[in-house]
Amino acid sequence: MIVAFIDDNRAEFGVEFICKHMQVAPSTYYAAKKRQDQPCARAVRDAVMMQVLLALWIANRKVYGAHKLWKAAHRAGHDIGRDQVARLMRELGIEGVSRLRKKVFTTRSDPDATRAPDLVSRQFKADRPDALWVTDLTYVPTRSGMAYVCFIVDAFSRRIVGWRAASNMKTEMVLDALEMARASRGGHRLVGLVTHSDAGSQFTSVRFTERLEEIGARPSIGTIADNPTTTRWPKRPTASTRPSAFTAPTAAAGTTSTSSNSRRCPGCTGSTRTASTGTAATCRRPNTKRRSTLAKTPTRSGLESNKKSLHQTQGDSVLPSDLPSRRRRAKGATRSPRGSGISDPEED
Image (cartoon, rainbow, N blue to C red; front, side):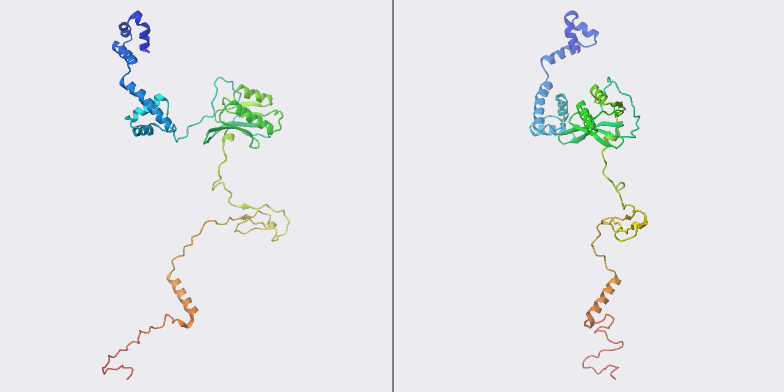
C-alpha cells in the first residue's frame, strides 16, 4: 500500500520527501520495487514448489495434509521443509481431510428479517390436534455428504406430520415439509394452528410466512435451539429403560380359576396367577446366562463315596479296602531262615 502511494505521488513530491514524512527509508521503497521487477530466489522457488505440491495433492485424491504431502514430496525427490509445505498449502488454499467431524450450524438467522412473536414460551403442550406444530432442521452425516432434514411435529400426539430431506437448507425444503403436513391433515385450512420454529432464515423468510397465512396458521419464532422435540432422535433402549417383567392383563372379577385362563409369558420360568385373583401376573424372564460346563474339582469325601459305590457294583470280585494286604502279617510273627533250627513260636 505504501509503495503504491509513493508511485502515485512521486512525480509531484518526490520519493525522498514522501518517505521522510511517512517515516519510511527510501531504500525500503527501492528494495520493494526491485522485488517486483526481479523476484528473489525464495519467491522463484516458491512458485516452482507450489506447482509441484499441487500436483502431488491432486494425485493423492486431495486428502493429504501438510505432513503426508511433505513425505510425498521427499519420495518424489524434492528437498523441502515441512513448514514450507504448510505455508505453501495455505497460499494455495488447499488442506487435507480431517477425521474430526466439523460442526454444522443449521440455524442461520437473518438480522434484517422481521421476526414473529413467541406465542409458545417453551410450553410445548396442546389440548387438541393441530393446535401447535413444532418444526426445526437437523443434519445427518452420510457417505455422500451431509443430509439435512426438516421435521414438523404435532405437539399433541408427538407425531411427525411432515418431513423433507435434502442436500441443502433452502426455503423450498421447509415449504415441502409444510405441504406434506397439510396434506396429511386433509388439505384443508388449519385455522387456529400455531407453527413454532427457531430464528432460522428459512422460517423468517417471506415465502414461509405467506404460506402460513394462506393455510390459516400463525407463525411463532423462539430462540436458537428452541425446539428439542423435533431434533431429538429416539434412543436405543438400555438396561434401565428396557422392561424387566411381563404383566398379564387383569381379568374380570367373578371368573373361576381354571388351568385354561391362567396366563404365562412365553419362555418364562416363574409361577403364574390365575384370573380369579383379579391381579396382574408377573413372570420372571428365564436366565439366559451361559453356565460353565467345566467339572468341579472332586473332594476327598467324594472320592471315597465313589470308591464305595464301585465296590458295591462289582460284588466280590474286588476285595474291600479295609481287609489286610497279603503281604501284611500278624503281629509278633517272625520268618525263620532256611536251614536254621529256629521255628515259629506259634507252631510249638
